[in-house]
Image (cartoon, helix red, strand yellow):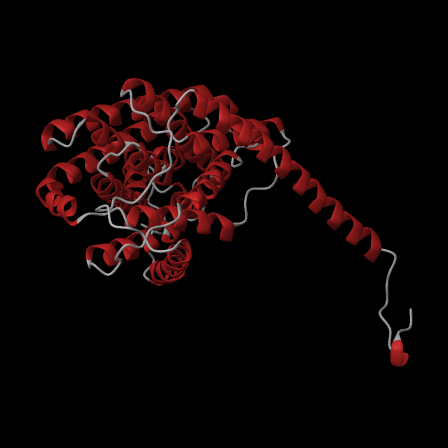
Length: 387
């Protein structure tokens, strides 16, 4: 159809239907997100009524899993939104870091590292046990069971020769189990009311205006995430802002800045949706024949890590709850949220979790390679070209 000045835009018969399909897709996604939001808010209200830990996060995760498995879930939140949510929580936790607690961690590092190594050993053993199933090879089993850095491990799964789909489902199943059971354990086993949002620990001084807190949070997220990405740190959207805001707090430059608590439920809901919507029917079908076996092994690993938490609390005198949260095998954002909301030693928990996470991500490729090579030699197979 000609336009002004003799020029026109050609509209083919396929253009209009394509635009309509895009609009229909956007509208359908918006409707599903609205339904997900309504269900999440309802679950949040219910869980808050029974004083369940982190009710907003727990509700978002539980509802998203139901929607995803039922096949009515919307697409997972866009990556920039997820990174924003991770950064918001990281800045809040970073401003909670206290010099006294960080100094005390120095005396506990042997215990923290020992427990992290023990967690790694448990993960590898569970992975080898998973590979005993005829539908799982060793590389896939170990990568699927390593307790830490689900996103990072999924990213390298294909490069290491693993079944990427099984690794994805197994890793997010572990994260979901951790996040779903943790509020129940904290609320009922420890009798802790952790139903409020996390907040920075302060000395009682008046806070600056809300816009100053938001401005600091925005700068810390952008700068911290960018620096962590350049340095190739795992989970840059979490570790970057966390390290930066903690450094500002420890340096005494934060003053009385605090993140407005009203914005934190957004972060918790997005984090819950991100994990919950990772489950779909295709993924569940892919794991169908090994689901019971994998679920049992993951449950055993989580229980064993809880036992390591008890040993850590005895070794360091930090208390049973911080010991449990420090050794929970996954769900870093959720762990930090519950730790802050329950007034646990957030710095100790965060430092222990980061040590575990970095250890898992750095050692996973080497462990997978060495394990696969050892088993091939036992079977009498010739080494591969990479070896």
